[in-house]
Length: 337
Length: 292
Image (tube, rainbow over all chains, first blue to last red; front, side, top):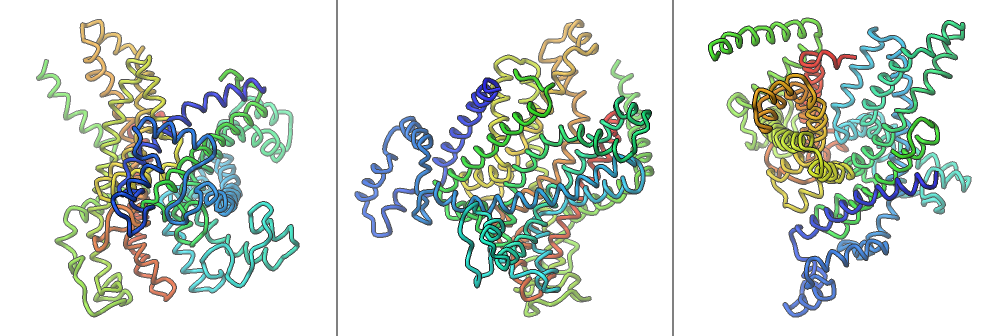
């Protein structure tokens, strides 16, 4: 097992290296001169040159790349122009906000998509199946930012059910002491139910808009995978043995159908982290997505680079975890793969 | 020989038309999608001539709710939202079509090379697509636009780049699967060069399944481009474009002027929805084995 994990880790190295090369090239192609920026508005050509030398931008490009790799390996993603803070600190402070939102969205999507996909697979070709297909096709066509705005209009402006759609907590609440960085969980750990309710209320609309995005692939995959399993011989055997429909569906079919699902859940999660960018923008959510958008708009390239690297690392780690989970739950998955 | 082929053509076309009619009759949803699609294409071509107001023409009637004079109401500068939404179809569809065409052509060529020649070409190209796929794709598109500069061409290029791996992988596996096919063997034995076998015999055969990808991809490309302009990249105001219009309208939600963001957003939904439905329908037409 350890051997497999090590081998699998080693196979992620070329992808990581590719990501580093790509981010380096992209950042060097960016418009704007960071040396001029750091030297300040009153800079003379000499002081700009001095800053450039300090940043190492006067070195040959290969040297700069080696510097960049060395810094990355030491966890140094550089300084953000906008905040003046190390990019890694900025990102780590904001990551829990994005994670809390993305995880809740994934849970909501699964809670809807699984029953829907199962029902559609159990009764293929019926109206349930058609409704499932129609609604997932529609959900796939909905731009998440548009749905986010629509939900704000209906639930905040029209009905007044939702709190003002800005940030993780309304301003008169103080954020709970940080343990996990998830406001809802931290508030519960503190035993502060008032803050929990407020944080949860802020979360609902953005998580709903985000979850729509994941609904279609999850529901379709559940349906396809359940259909495949339901035609398998062991289901016929179970039926012949007179097991109840419920036992067959839940204990036999669903458990086997979950295996391909785990792969797609990982993919959907990373999809969601990307789609987050737009939702965070709509809801003023202080996560890494809105950080990246601000960085792109002002060409804050250390920040963009850092964001992209972090996202790629999360994605690669996620795939690693999925592969390992797969080999644990399904011994048929080859360890040499 | 040539005469034979030219006589066969129309019957093939008629067969496709017959299939098309059959599919449309079978699935009213596809028919519905085809109608919306036809409407969109019409608006994209003739939009600027059929709209009642100029898309940039402002007036004193600011923030009018939808009514007879202004079907979709007016925005904060008194511009007619109906006209702007219709005119925007051209730029949104244009970006999507251009981007998908680029990634289709690029992906077909690179994927076919990787699948046909294998070996180190295959490994390098595979690594390339793995690297692209290691990014959350929307984020990669943002990075590309940020690096190359904020223009429509770069939006198209960014959208093309993030779609490239899908076509590449698809073309690679389709070519690879056909290497041992009988007709490929026959073509080789009758003295075709390797290049001729690939271009004249294999590629025409992988085109139909790839067409299905295009239609499914178009909707995604539109969403992507609109998302980029929603966050302020690419198309700039006052150009009428759905993403920007939604983003501009977002400021007026809190004061209840819903029509500013709603109609352009609805247009976006309709366009993507019809592409996705058409894609499903096309799959049924071109790839009957793909039906579940």
